[in-house]
Length: 568
Image (cartoon, rainbow, N blue to C red; front, side, top):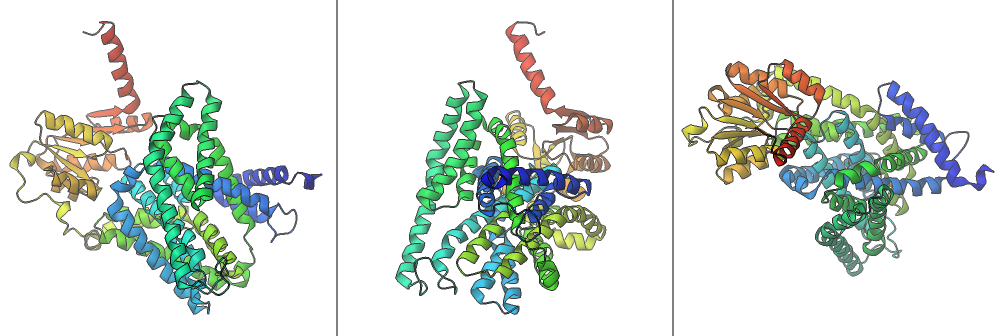
């Protein structure tokens, strides 16, 4: 009877076991998705007992990838990507190159052909955006500069892997594999024609989504929202995500993942984007579980027994090699040590695109089964270890900072953006406002100060914002305001007020403590979105703590009272 309902059997078994193993993983202080992967191993063909339908699981996983990437797109707009483009774009490309070279080098040492070695290295070079988002959300760092750089970095990696996925089939013949429709390997003319058509299709899809999609789909959400039906609204969101992904694959030859990602990006342009994200979340979470279970089904646990040294080598490339390369690149771009360590920890794992690339490589004769097993082993172990890596960077940063010479050397203090220019006007050096953060809130505060002729110095970790501010005549310093040295460069000792407008409240108390150490009489103003945080900050004797919900309620209430003539 069970075999007559393979879809129901697969879903029920996968979700049930995922719940059990996910719960156990959390109890052991591991990410729940480690439990999901283990559930997949248990119902996979490499372990005794019940074996789920692999084809159905693979299709459910495709839907999971669509909805996962749709969620990524809704969290990260093109504007956010452009705000960190100068580090995310070159950093991701260089890191992919370095990691691919390490993976390919090790595989070539094992005696693999160069084509297989390159595909293997590429699979180890790209981290999982899904795993990263979970890690950042658990640390409340998704909206921080470090979070935006890390997500932007991984979005560039994902886009690069999409390009690899569409270019690999026509290049398979040249790399020693089997090119589709070409038994003798790609001929020059056909190869270049295929590459050109592929790039043209991808460009056409991206252009269509950015130009037309940004206008059409937000209006569609508005029309459906006007019906007042919650069911129709949720259906519209899910239908748009899956349909755009399917249409992108059918009409443009683009992967489901890229299509769903751009669907999420255009949905973000709507004023209903938060509601769309909330309404689609349960379904996205359910299919995310099925995705990780299906990945676990492909894993042969015996590979860790048969080839322990190879597994350790793969793990070393993912966790150590990639992390060191990423941290070095971030420091070369003159970002703080904290940013370098957080980005490196974010990349110390591999995930969904690695699995997709491994499957494509195997189908083209460019990756042996042994390579697939090693990639899956590296993914399972690196995802399980990733929370420990994030915890370890906190202690590592403290250790490095305690060695001041090493810290200054790594952070590159000879940075022209880390200190005010010599010709800065005197009004910005005394009785000025030091404004930490130049995001949506910080810009509004800066605009109000400018209108009233109040001098201020901006402190922001985003170097591109600092460069833009200076280009337009603003006064700004690049760096982490929790570092006393950065506050000194903003001349905090003679400032009248410190205003912390950044949404990342993680280091607010350190900022205030350092500011008061350098200027005991300075007035401090901070923002927060959390009542518990607001209470803790108020206990630190901060002059004024603004809670987002309270200020919104106060403004709306004042407007209502004014309309009824009840204000003083």
